[in-house]
Length: 418
Image 1 (cartoon, rainbow, N blue to C red):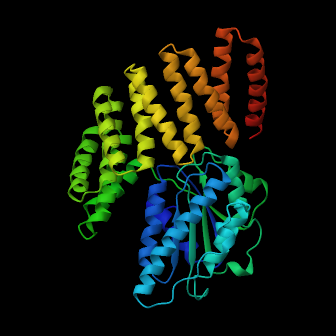
Image 2 (cartoon, helix red, strand yellow; image 1 turned 135 degrees about the vertical axis):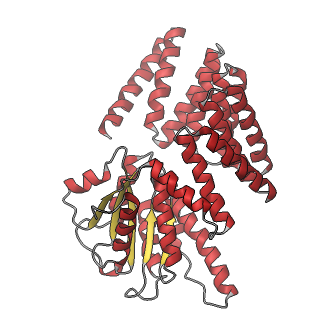
Image 3 (cartoon, helix red, strand yellow; image 1 turned 45 degrees about the vertical axis):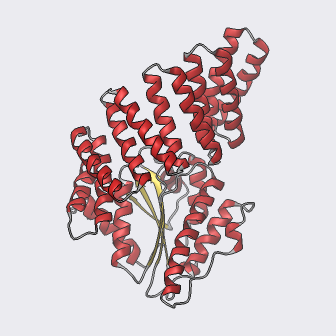
């Protein structure tokens, strides 16, 4: 394995794990940037192994319930697509998910265990076929929740008899690894461990080769080109990224894919922001928001509103920033994304503070604190309470300041224990 390059090594590890008969769980310690290569490698294995069933999910981990809902919804969506095709081919559809999976009042970890156990039933012969379940969150915001997910799904010391066909791949964060350390402390012997060692430049080169591969279908090449533009931006190759975004925008305009046009414009705005052309970035973000509204894409509206608000703050257009952040907070509420709503309410308060509207800023931060309390978002609650305390000092409201001081100490104590 030592003589292999990083990408070849990753592929060899995945091949050995999926085809092997030993442990059925693999903990990949990988960075957010490298995750795209891991997912692509698994997709290639899926295409090359029609006898196996693959499920790959990259939903972020914010809390247990939200994560379980996202994964189960993704499985249900993909299952529906597969069954429609099987019916068209006059084949028997695959078994639907058990009722427990859809019970939002049930324990989210039990729902995930039920889901994985049921998915194994989709594999007809455990000796010849594999059910590969890759739970690879793009971002791990809640480390405690993520550790519980791994602990609930991956065995520490033995392999249950029912798991013969299962290959479970879970993730640790290479920037701040914590799951692997916990497993080692527990003396876990039932899980394979592997740390990726691919650099972003290698990822960019591999993706560029895929984008240029004329043997691949156009949508696949376009998807790779989008990744190339993102990598170029991260590597500071802005002119190359702008050229790629130009090609992408033209492609999506010709195919009338409004959502992706909005994504491209956000990418261009990010580049202009990096080179401090904030007015140009603002124009791109506004155009992106218009397209996102036309497409009725709440997620793109949320992303665009936050980006627009941030660049308006750079331009000291505080009233405009407040409007953008308020739009984002309203959209986050529609999406039931209380994490984003708390973030945007805090930003909205900062815009009001910069405009010297202290009463208005306190109103926003009070709402942000309430949102953060409701979901146990202590990282945001800590910063918002700090801002509220400063306002209380300025307004000489000692009683309220003491209340916030007491809560802030409790929050910091909880954060220290995490």
